[in-house]
Image (cartoon, rainbow, N blue to C red):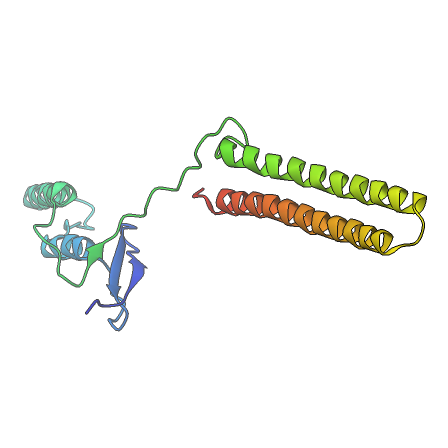
Length: 190
């Protein structure tokens, strides 16, 4: 079972670690803690406040200063062999980069063309339905009342209604393609 972890940043070195949620927040990371322990084991240089230090005091001061400088230099270059299992360094992922396109509509050009064709076809069907109803009404107006005339009127209205439904459906399908393309573009990794 995976242990839930939270991100913790060491105040000493700024490295990021993933520590268990229920663990207490440490004061320093293992590397900084090791460096601090190594520095605390080296005696600090002794400074004598006497106005005229003896020769032995100066020699002792130089030896302590050299030991301190050597300890600091080795700690700076020293890498810890292994870190406790509690700490797992996590590198931040690089910021996502947006693909470079020659334009907004560079991707899925074929689908965009198909959507345009559906829109054009929808307009042609709408125009054909309007012309059809006009021609049917003109033909009906020229004939006298009869059952054939009633059938012509009903046939013209049915043709117009079918054309209107087909036109709206084709236009809606073209818009659906466009919406799906926009969704893909807006959810693309940035």
